[in-house]
Length: 253
Figure 1 (cartoon, rainbow, N blue to C red):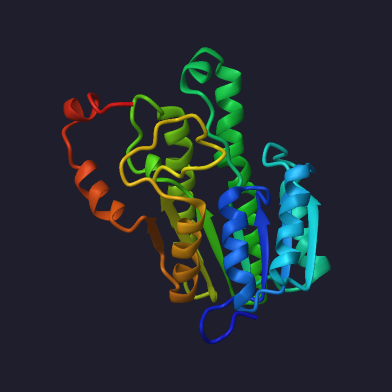
Figure 2: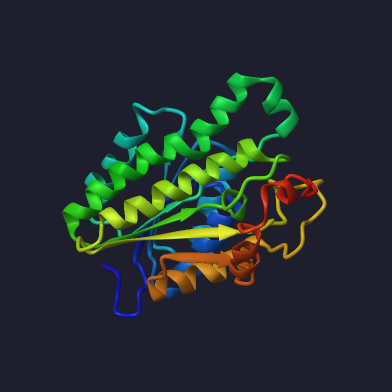
C-alpha cells in the first residue's frame, strides 16, 4: 500500500534492465519499497538489476520474462504478477530502444519493430496494469516518455513518434482513471547520458539516469501528472512547440 507520503512498498518494472529504471528502483527501496518485480528479456543485465535491488535493501526481488513485442503475451505477464504477488503499488514502464534513424528509414520492418517496442507493446501491457490497479482501488503508473515526443525532429522522427504516441496514450489513460484511486505520471527526460546514448554528443540540458530518478521519486511522492528532467525543459519545450515549422525543420540533429 502506498503510504501517506506517497511512497510505494511494491513496484513492477516493465523494462527492468533499463538504466533509468534501475536508478529509480535504487531511489525507491530506501523509502520502504520492499518488493521489486523486474520484467524484461532474460539477460545478464536483468540479473544484475535484480542483484542491485537486493543490495539496496529490497526484501523480495524477482525477475519475470517480458517482451514488449509479444503483444498477445505481455498483458498476461502483467496480470500474472498481480495474481501471484497481490496488490502492486507502482507500475513503472521503462522499456524502450533508441534505434538509428538512418537504418530505420531504410528498413521499414525495423522501424515497425521499434514502434512496437516503444509504444504499442507497452500500451497493451499498461492497459492490463490499469485494469488490475482499478480493481485494487489504488496505485500509480509511471511512464518514461521523452522530450523527443513533445515535437519530433526530422533527425529522430521515428523514435520521437514512438514517444509521442506513448505520451498521448499515458495522458489519456490517466484521464480515464480519474476517480479510481489510480494515478498516472508521465516522465519526459531530455538527453540522458548513458548506455543508450553511448558515443553520441550530449545535447543541451543533458541529464543522467540518477538525476531522472531523483525527479521521478519526487514526482511519485507528490502525485505529479508530468515530470520533466531536468525541470527547465518544461519551459524550453513550451517555446519549442511554438516555433514555426519552417524554423523547426532547420533544427540540428
